[in-house]
Length: 177
Image 1 (cartoon, rainbow, N blue to C red):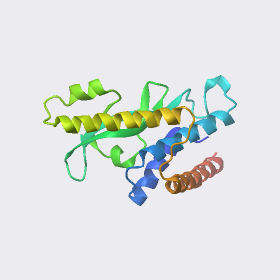
Image 2: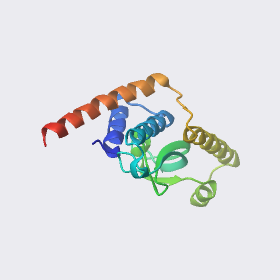
Image 3: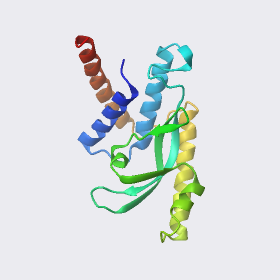
């Protein structure tokens, strides 16, 4: 059986090989769809899917970190992650996954408290809030079972790549038993 970690590793590998950036919505939508497909195939036994997860949801976050290539502070107010069982989440974007000292905020108050002392304009903060609210709406759309795929070609290429890699993993597991 393929784990969630196997799938996420392949999602990250796909992005790394192709230098993909700014596709968190499609990445989370793909993982959300994969979760629900696995959940349905498992016949909802014990209210879990084949990954042992009870609930997986899209979650809007603000990410503050240091970009590895430039060592510059980055504030990304519009980002999605996959929330798992309400207690933890998984980063699905290679670009963000490589931030140094990344901090994630799922509410505006925590973000404002964290950035106290950083000289940011009122206009910048307003723009951050607007983008964060926009991503909260996107997460809600996905969690309500509606598709939100800004780049359908990318989504299908990602799905094809991950399916191909998962087949290899499953074959290896079969023959190594």
